[in-house]
Image (cartoon, rainbow, N blue to C red; front, side):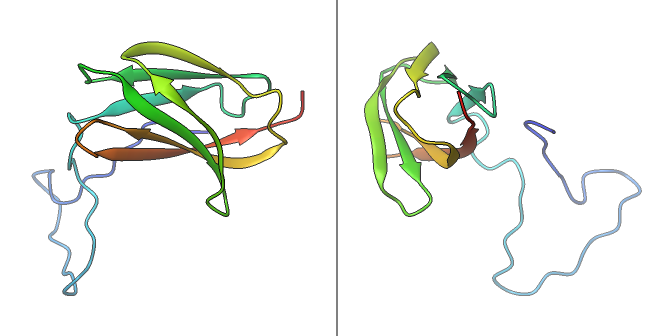
Length: 114
């Protein structure tokens, strides 16, 4: 699997410009310096590690299932954090980090069997 892959269009000297329809979303470097975090291992079994970067204050962390149901909520700090996943069943989940100003970043992770 790949992690932290970014795709840029039109940044190479020989690349062609791609015509876009109005309203087309272009993925670029929007907000890359604002809030960054890594989740590992992925898939996780018992412990989920969160490495939070580019923040000066504590943030709100949440684990949500595919239906939007919140399964865990707590404080995450700049640097290294760990969350115990033993009580969470196997499946696909979303980890949200919310800064004090409301900026939210979400990443997916998989919880596999213990």
